Length: 299
Image (cartoon, rainbow, N blue to C red):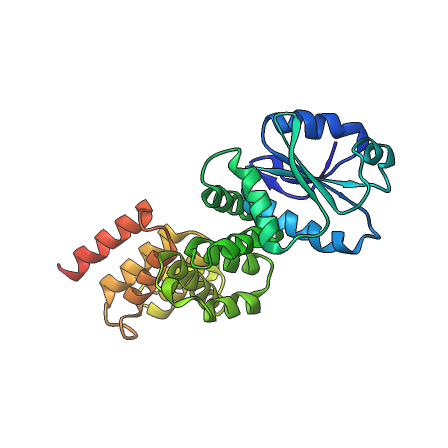
């Protein structure tokens, strides 16, 4: 079996190959999708540049092309069979046979174009597939791979709001809050007000506010003992949102708004809007919350 570097829907996108599995992984595998084979060696200087560039481009293709890395020092017979005389050497296979390739280093633009040409053999929308793959990586905890894929997408489309927000979320998942903050501080002007950017800003602000709130259990007891403790209810809602219980958080803020809509300069309504912004606009929780808030405002 091959070692896994990346996953998209359970498919290994970048793997280490070997002579014994070449037929299965490359020849047979290319009947399902194009396979790019990178012949390299640890002592090869250009390989250290080309390899990562190929990997990034393959990840950006979002599951439409795979890459198999072959160390020629460990697979000398295979290298001889493939008549590898100089490295890096790259071959692309489709439908069980080689269809393209090159020898020597390439510019980043050439690498992207080569991978795109192979991915186009599979059809579909490459960027959309890449976005879906990156989102899945992030959801499965592969934040490093997700960050690389989102970054690769931005290399193709610097104004892709979903990819930009995804990159920020990836850095947050890696506990790189400073890097995430730096990215948000430098959002391209044309996507600064995109829903995805507004959402990630709201999520970060909610998380920061939750850090100052107490434990949910203690706050519930406080509110239960004194329903008019608006600060405790506000902190309870913030803490609930931080745990992902947005429905309960919205309910607490609506109750606070019902009791005193002007408390703390309308903090309840502002926090409600922040939670709404942090979630998909068509989320039933958001739609219900907005409707209830509107009915209170215009009652």
